Length: 95
Image (cartoon, rainbow, N blue to C red; front, side):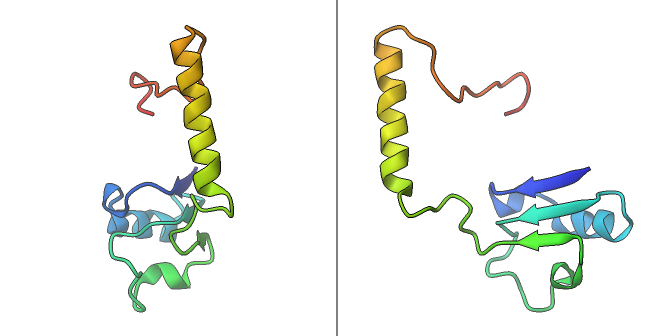
């Protein structure tokens, strides 16, 4: 099991995550957000070999705003013409 967290920092119990990572209950974690940002220097996450951290920029690319707008407009065109939408949220699955 691995955790990839790019959502909101407060959505994950960081203390429980740290314990699970230290005990091997979770194989690893890729984290872009944290409960407290910037991540405090004394956070145990800094010392864990099974954690990959990024500076809260997982959603950013050089063309992020243009790509997001283009995607929205394509989905809007699909919606208006009765065609299937892309990246539908499946609330029954939890995402």
